[in-house]
Image (tube, rainbow, N blue to C red; front, side, top):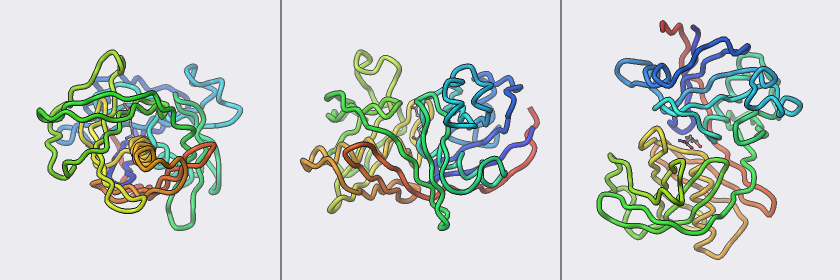
Length: 268
Ligand SMILES: N[C@@H](CCC[C@H](N)C(=O)O)C(=O)O
């Protein structure tokens, strides 16, 4: 099977072209592909399927020809992936499956519009972040409070006093299962300048990753909330680089690099 490897600020993905949905993709196989020693290695898999042939999202076929079937590295499916959808768009254009410019991509969280710039950056309209109140997490014995943000997928974004660089994120942080019955992506952030934050993330289904697009938007929302703002552009520094988040009255945008680095044949 052909595969392509790509990343967005080092949040990395194995792209599996499967236009007609012929591939069996059980969780164990996804986990093997994502294994950094026994497989190719990635934070997740992006299966490329025709929207109209994908029963989960066939109702989006009028707005988006291609469905990003996103799986975390543990094999579980997620509603959305902000960096994934940017890398997915880069793949579609490079493979000649979409024209450069602007187009929709189907996801379990709904259609996301993407725009490719000549610089190589890809911007995605991430939709309206939904604020759902506050909750708590415990990281290495330390409790932090944050904002629950629904980006299509669930987030808890915590602006904290401790420097995020010093956190031990090698284990699953504790969270309230009643607030997050399907699990949660947990962001820890420090505001470090005017509309500039540093963020680390422990992703549901993938562990600590070097970047998370939906998490970057959730973190910008939490930073804005703290500053009493609702609109503006935030630079979000992550371990793998920097992405830009813009909040306006209607929606949110995520922008940053999306690159393809390798392709080959995967023996299953
Ligand atoms: N890295 C992604 C988010 C991927 C899905 C997430 N782990 C979940 O389970 O919700 C991003 O860039 O948004």
